[in-house]
Length: 123
Image 1 (tube, rainbow, N blue to C red):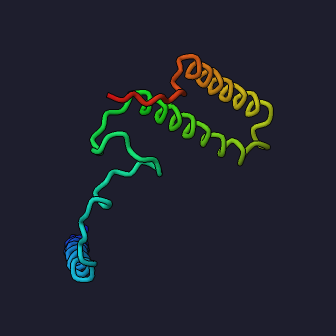
Image 2 (image 1 turned 90 degrees about the horizontal axis):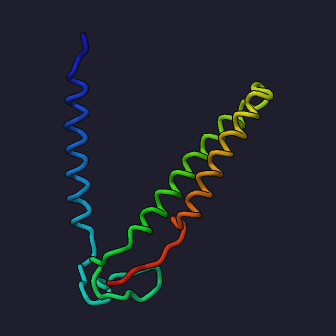
Image 3 (image 1 turned 90 degrees about the vertical axis):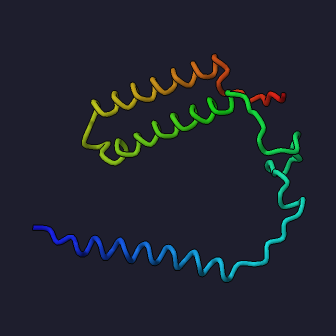
């Protein structure tokens, strides 16, 4: 039988620590100085086109991000192959070439579909 007392105690300690930490930060924080420079939206060192942060962006920005994440995650799968490369022999080498070929075809498709180009549409 599992003794749930330890889980309950851990839960209480976690809640107490969280509330205590928030109170501690509230006590030591600096005085809040709110002025135009702090509330102005900042875009990577470039002055923003619109004065509000609630601006619409093209869907191409999100597509570019998704394509990057997909290719980044897929290339992570090459690490386990590199670790046991000598054990797989020719079979592993052919498999990784097929995998890379599929990635290259996906990259070419994204390039031809202009998913890798980012043009900001304003308005």
